[in-house]
Image (cartoon, rainbow, N blue to C red):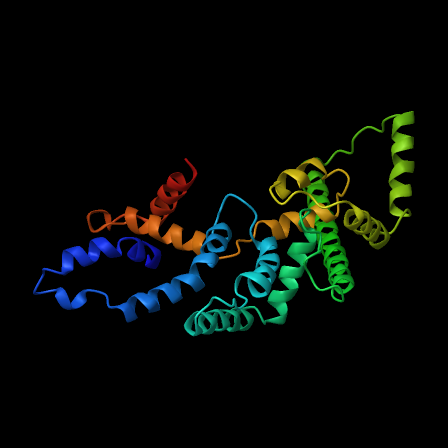
Length: 282
């Protein structure tokens, strides 16, 4: 908006110069100087805002790299900057530090950056990389235990339901060689490599690989390499779906506001949900 006003400044002055009623709105040189200083601070950040507000690509893992780039380069003081521009940049850095100072938020961002094959944690703190790796391993083991518990519960439920339905026991079948080998393989998997060792080996191998190009799609990479990293890919699916900003939800509210108008205020909630879903996905 400010850049647009500066571009159209000659036209604005020509319109207001002969207007007696609104002539006082004609920008003075002080106003122009303030607008130029504000634009010099805000314009470089606009591109990063547009990228992190996207919905069709992964954004959460790019927050830490973007924050580092903003504070170290984009918002760093320049000799050509005015005092107002320098103060605005400093204030923006202070706001970003305050917004992202939460320990839990920093932990989430480090995990997401580590799980993104474009970065693999290379933009995080070197001292916190091992700590983040240990946190991912712990979370992965907890997730595996929960899945194992749910699987056992569903299996026992299915068995009990099967017993209730059939009172007569099935006729015993003659065992085949494939059944014997399958039982041997199942026992080997139970007493084989522990989950922590397997997860640690996967994560170590993942971090040793070269980083992808920043223009590549990390979701496509994880889809193609899910068989290589079956355990870590579960965490990647968990964190890659997080949006870096609230822009997506705000767009959803705007869509709902366009659907639920005063003329259509009697729509039922389930119909509103379905209409919003259709509008956003068709």
